[in-house]
Image 1 (cartoon, helix red, strand yellow):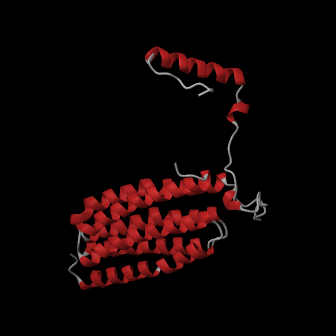
Image 2 (cartoon, chains in turn purple, brown):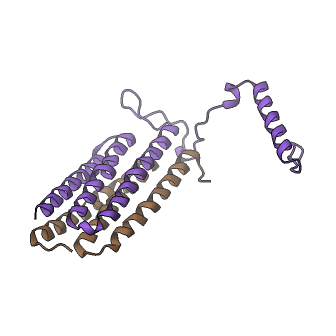
Length: 151
Length: 93
């Protein structure tokens, strides 16, 4: 009976955080703040539900622990991937909370943000690296024919 | 299987509340101004579905539902990662 009361309390804990996360996703003004709210659903909300289920039916505790570990590992990675895609498209609000100026009329066809690595490094250094790699490749696999620029 | 009527009723009410959370979460899928808002809301809905499936396993007393929730979590992770890459890079592969 004590185990069941603890399990129902853990389920209510998880339900509370699920409701708060859904409320935040509806009410918050910006994609990154919405992601902040929906990240709580995955960690605290679902993990509370899984803990309550493990307390209510102890025979499934091992499977629920595996599912909980999986959700705890993958869901922050997915949230981080969405946040990184938002940041790379420069859709972040500025310091005053205003929308950024649109770069192009069609934001869906916007070119992705890229760092110009070749400008950051010197040209001769990159040529040295490429020639060293090709020398090493020829030394290990002399039968491979490397494609040239004229191919 | 849960024996006591108190825990049985509580689990059914919590399942009902979790299912009713799906409707306000799908509002953001429809109304989200940007593609990343919609993707975040779909990710939230799959996370809620994992919780709903676990609650359904409690109500029905069937342990197979937990394995279904694990499979859903795995496929949702792959889908979210690939769509986020499509948003930022313009291509998946």
